[in-house]
Amino acid sequence: MIGYVTIGVSDMERAKKFYTELLSDRGAKVVNDVGRIAFIGTKPGEAMLAVCEPYDGNECSVGNGVMISFAAESEDEIKTLYNKALSLGATDEGAPGVRVPGRFTGAYVRDHDGNKICFYMFA
Image: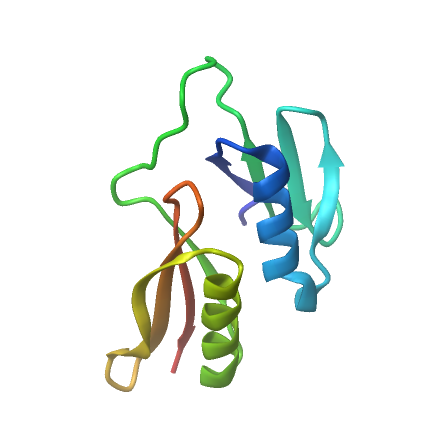
């Protein structure tokens, strides 16, 4: 259902590197780069993440309540993605763990610009 999600960033090269390296095990790459916006995914027509410098020229800002969530297939994958994000410079927002017993496990980080990211799986 989702085509792409766009987040504002302050440094395009850093953002492209962070997200392509973070999601490299899933085949993520820059699918389309048009300067102030780049689409990261596996191929056009599938869900992508777009990183962009804000069109209005103002500084990027983080949306209150906005979060990008990446589904994982196991608790081990959640831990791997969480640790990989931290190694790439993300900051901790909640270590991997069960959030809703028997229903939801997740881990949370923030990227270099403060965008919140979740790695999760439903039971």
